[in-house]
Length: 243
Image (cartoon, rainbow, N blue to C red; front, side):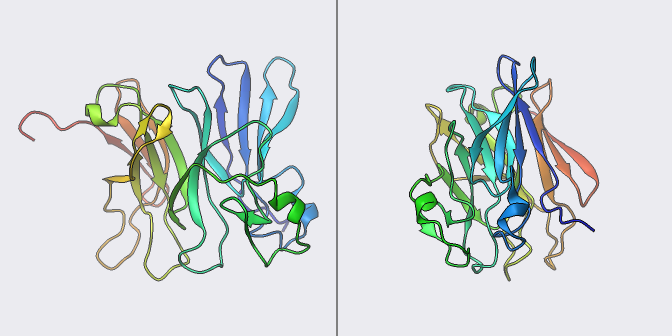
């Protein structure tokens, strides 16, 4: 059949509802199917709802997901699945604010201007344009969902930060991810280490009994977690008195 990597898409409306932002992942790991297979991909598109006019908002993002607007700065953020087959500890998947017109490196470089020598032809002109992302998660955690928390159901410590659903690695001896983490924010920027919030998706044998994908906040302020192995939506609320 046709090549169709990264077929899932992330979609979010701008705060005023006038624009849609759509993440479109690459059609390969590092263009091994040819650069022509990557036309209009590895990018976040902006679509005008009224006219249907569309344009590439930012590019060089191998597989952008979890598109969300940070509530304080109103900036667009995404979590990104980076490239594989550079070993168990490269390349870190990341979360970043997404700047209009910015290029984030894929496929020619990663995490700014770290050149990937496997990609041919090399493009030093594009590497020179690549900007580093804002925040490293960890290698191969496969973040597929992100949401900022501004409700009051969960403890105050979570206000203003981001929950990230990490689907989990497949290509390292010690699995990474398979959990939901929280990244604190202050002044519209990440302000601390990622904290485990929901774990236990791997059993004692290292087998997946669940894999987090999307995360969202419901009207009551509870955290919802979609799990595509357990075929379940989990709902996380604050523990009651005496719990």
